[in-house]
Image 1 (cartoon, rainbow, N blue to C red):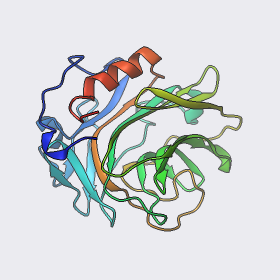
Image 2 (image 1 turned 180 degrees about the vertical axis):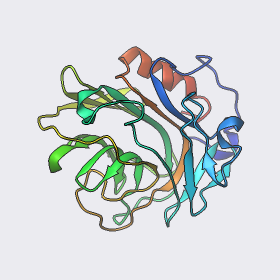
Image 3 (image 1 turned 90 degrees about the vertical axis):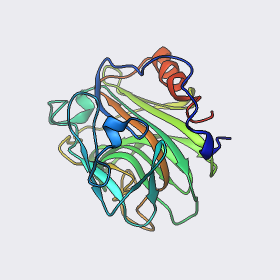
Image 4 (image 1 turned 30 degrees about the horizontal axis):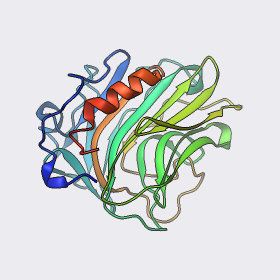
Length: 243
């Protein structure tokens, strides 16, 4: 289990994360990313699409802290980077390092999500179960974790491969499963939110909408990472998070 006071350990492993296809990168341990965190979380992917802060997420060492009440970050969606009407016409990857401060039956916090209600995709959590999926035309396609624990860092990474219409979801490099997307029509123009639910993947907004915990890094790619690349990114961060 990670010890929060020891997160200043040097990173042991790959010198950098995978950069090929990286279109959004928010890193709470990189000063260039968090230097303006009172107003935004800077995107250091090179795309310059910073996420605006709402209601005061805080920064504590190497991570962003979300209070589970009303704070989050928001940036533009992926339409500027993946030019298409429908997101399922393109491969992509969503990746996040997270820590739950609390888990209870009323919490449905979005983690890394685009859209809201029925027209949405990304990674969210419901009562400590994280899921990665797409919900085009109101039909949910997703893969889930088991129930996660409080006070533990997790590396979650979901890929979508357009050629096979296949979702895959990894927890700390373990492939949790796959799902085939059988419906289409998911628009790309919605906003990207970090830490806010808005009914993401679930179809309606009930209970608490906000994530209560910490995020270390968020990365989005305009392609599906390979299993070797999943291992690379996990090893890049694991000593930082004590995993």
